[in-house]
Length: 226
Image: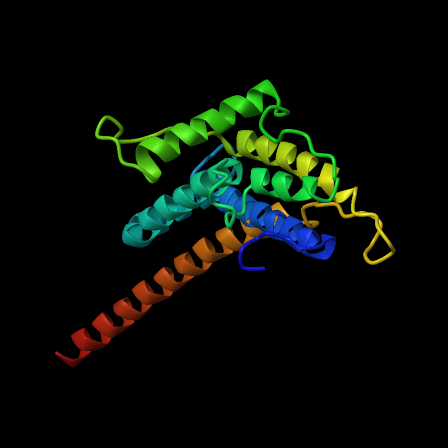
């Protein structure tokens, strides 16, 4: 289904699943983005862990800074593209293209943007400003942008899933598929990402301690030979 234009309800369900998959990926990006900042916060971690994390991030800054930049791009672009409305580009995985195709099969749809809470409308507005002036189209007046918090982003994503699930509940026809389909985050989703992120930092710290120890041993051996 390369054109994303379903010919039957099975293909429509496939389109729905692909958009749900995009929401899941976006959630992963948002959680990673939060981890990159929370790992430095003494409000989130104990002082010793924060100090170790900062040491490793500073030592590998040419890795971690581009990583953070890349994740921020992914968060902003992956959410805003879900709300694109260009009807000429039916190949895009957007909520409005899903609506257009779902209506062909008499599936009732709300408006994924108008139905957002006022807080989530504001979050989407900030993401669009970031996209239009910094990430997708550079604006010389913007040398940096403010990205909404992790909680604000997930509140918006939850509203998106409410919309998707309102469609998923309507996949009831001829016994060809399950009665309804619902998107939900996997159990332990956020915890697993946080755990892996901190594990990477911990392993880098252990490796750095081992490297320094090896240098000290090697230097000591060289001194003993002189």
